[in-house]
Amino acid sequence: MPGPSAPVLTNEKIPNNVDLSSDRRLQRALEKWQPEYINWWNDMGPEGFQDKDVYLRTAISVDVDGWAHFDYVKMPEYRWGIFLTPQENDKKIGFGDNIGKPVWNEVPGEYRNSLRRLIVTQGDTEPASVEQQRLLGLTCPSLYDMRNLFQVNVEEGRHLWAMVYLLHSYFGSDGREEADELLERRSGNADHPRILNTFNEPIDDWMSFFMFTMFTDRDGKYQLASLAESAFDPLARTCKFMLTEEAHHMFVGQTGVNRIVRRAAELTKEFDTDDIAQYGGVPLQLIQKYINFWFSSSVDLFGNERSSNAAAYFANGLKGRAFESRNYDDHDCKDAIYKMDTLAGDKIVEEEVAGRNAMNEQVRDAYIADNQNGVNMWNRELEKAGIDFRFELPNRRFNRTVGQWSEARFNPEGSLITEAEWDKKKYDWVPSPDDKAFVKTLMQQVIEPGKVAGWIAPPNKGINNQPPEFEYVKL
Ligand code: BYC
Ligand code: FE
Ligand code: FE
Image 1 (cartoon, rainbow, N blue to C red):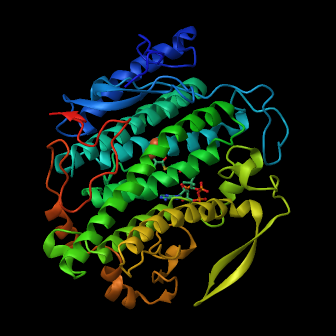
Image 2: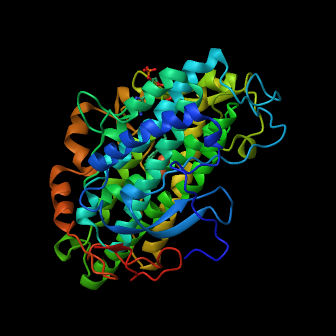
Image 3: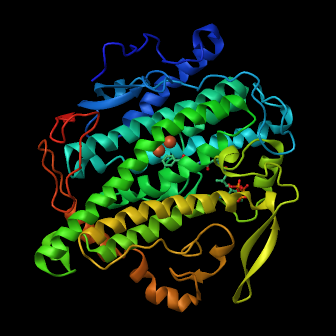
């Protein structure tokens, strides 16, 4: 519940901390886009629950302690706002050729196309994920989970607003056109798909949803953190605030999978078998297959191992590495060397690559390490239960569709295999049609407050200090 000193939502049509009302042209342009956005939300947003009251968090400022306001709201009436972290005095560019020079508050002409492209690619993922998840409310394992789904969805909607604000403010009529197109592409549509591969994959069961929020939203964390380093300061400031919301999305994934693992461990012990499908649990092997699929797809999202695009973004200050100042010493990288595995015929050999050309791979390294921490937590759940099975992240070469490893087949350990071996084994590694059909049988909607479906353990605690049995959605 909001404390007595919590700030109240403003009456402006578009809540913001960017003094929107002082720029009438921009305000009018965004107010014209707003009904288009609402149309898109009504068509492509959560199916079946648009008129229900949902207990949601709304960003109302960027104050560390007071940014989040919790209350019941009908999703189409959610106050999607524009919030940038405060401008810092004398802020300097932190990496690349322009290091030490003041950050930019306008878009330099020579970087206009590159920046627009980065912003559009980022923006495109946000509505894509809402489209991918639109039917999940119909099969939610609890009201608590349904609420978390909708929370993630409205915040991805706000992230779209964040990018559209930049396109409208800084990119003139091309920016407005791009903003319109962000509402026109559709996840999974053969003729008009979303830009990046993972955002065209179906998310039609909750196993996939939790894996996506674990692995794919974490790509969001690393990409946003990379853009938060940008010399184009409005982009940096908007991404910095988006990261605040992102933490909850990954929490949903991390704890969601953890609860599936806990339930699986309970059933394994209760019936003294790991064949727990017959008792309505998700076998650990099957959880591993979902990990393999969503991790490998998300690993694709970092782009080519060697990228001259990424080298130019870095040199020019458009996009750094995630947590550039905190986690790296050399912020120039002109003379840096990065040692990278490369496929040479049927051998994997180490090669030296110019550091700036290896930016995508460096961010991917950090991303993989972060995921490993999450997997370790799931394994502790198994350890506590006295079960020997352990989850593993597949090797980064496994099941790739982008970059050098997409040119051959690899097993989860990362060894080169033949196409024939892949065909024979692939459904030992990623979910088969039968696996998906089984998972579908588990996806039965549970909506009684405090009750949870049989394939997943209840949450440890509720949201915003409310109890788990709170009426998170009024049906
Ligand atoms: N699928 O030189 P390369 C999030 C294309 S998630 C399809 O390596 P670059 C969220 C690439 O576009 C965060 N195509 O590219 C999470 C390029 O195309 P062209 C999203 C791909 O630029 C959950 C070509 O391959 N944000 O926020 O170095 C829920 C050559 O590639 C893919 C961003 O991605 C792919 N996976 O790196 C909601 C940040 N990967 O030029 C939200 C902005 C590459 O040949 N984007 N290609 O037509 C970027 O920084 C870069 O575009 C990338 C790619 C890192 C994605
Ligand atoms: Fe997002
Ligand atoms: Fe997210």
